[in-house]
Image (cartoon, rainbow, N blue to C red; front, side, top):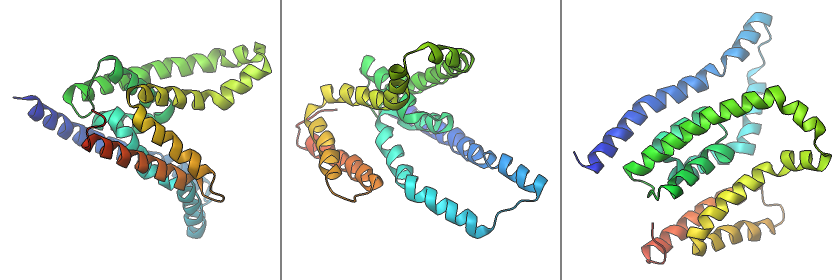
Amino acid sequence: MNEKEVLSRWKKSSILIGSPTNILAAATAFIPVLYLCMKYDCWPPLSTVLTAWAMIAASFGAMWFVEPISYYASLGLTGTYLSFFAGNIGNMRVPCASLALDVTKSTPGTLQAEIVSTLAICGSVFTNLIGTTSAVIVGSAVLSVLPQFIVDGLTVYASSAIFGATFGNFAIKYPQIAVFALAIPVVLKLVPGLPAAVIIVITVFGSLFIARFFYKKGIVKA
């Protein structure tokens, strides 16, 4: 059995396990709400539910399409299922998977990349669980003795620092694409009244199209 056949079986097994698991997780998220509504007989009107859903869709709807596509190269198929099940995708799973792929010199889309990203994400889940538990126990005590500017930096700039480090890691490997990936949102930000969701969608898909164009022209290699 060659690598292509093994990868095909790997993906079929991932879909078979990942799809129902994620759907089950999404369904069980409604259990606390349904319990409270049944116990206290406080069912909201359908119009209220739809209005709330519309507000969430307007704010985060773009992410439903952007995140699975933009993160797939780093996460792979199995890693995508794991990441959306565990959460903390952008600030934990993607950096861990990207770094693991870089260290092992794995090419996205290969069997090695699938295995490496999956193991990296599984490791990040356990590390995250240990770190989160430790933070809950001692985090407040540590923050209370830190200077306020450090606390502000941790709460405000932590995610930006993680995304910046991830971008820098890829920018070193593909500087031609990095220039456009950085220039597109900067230019779009200058357009008055342009929603953040639109900027994100144009930036992600614009960068993907540019990367594909450069790849076809032989300017960059995978």
